[in-house]
Length: 292
Image (cartoon, rainbow, N blue to C red; front, side, top):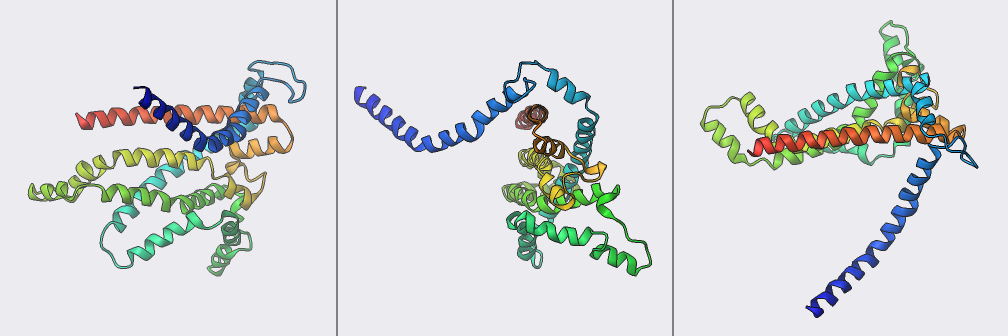
């Protein structure tokens, strides 16, 4: 027993030594800033401030600019996430078949994952600028050019950019899920004379339940990360319809308003945490129902 205990302690020490760089990095770059940000959200000044409780959060929630940013973020997520899932699932179903050039098509959807955002955004700027390629085509047909990023069309442009950026990733996840479905299920359904629709509903969607929930969660998280593209295309103060929570926090950082910045960040983090927690509980209930 003593020998095995010594071996276990030695193994634990070796494991701790190898994990130490990651743990130190986590403490320095994540945990300590997290605690510091939490402190700033409860004081009235980052330097020598006094404790004000929830006053910063109350002022933030009452702020009409924050309300507008939260509303825009919610609307964008409601529109973009379902579209992303539906289109990526359709592409996965298509590319899971033996069609001509499917490897080239797959590669085309993966390219946005590896190309730097800043360089690609230049293409989108050229495309949607008032003097850009899209307006040149519209003008050729006799229509007036549209300033896409300074009208209500801006939200549609951001949705298109989001889909372009994230479709390939979700498609790969769905493809992996489809290829893990045992072909015997479909063979048994063919013997029973099931239609393609019934096979899709009763086999494909059921077996893709874990993958679907994961894709759903990742799509929501990625929808909050679309700020990079929007910022590079339209700047720090875009059209009202695409002024997101990330714009609000970025502008608060630029003005050194750390109290409102950290309060907004924690509200968004709590919202995402609660949403993900609810989704995981729903997924577990569905999985237990299917297993039963």
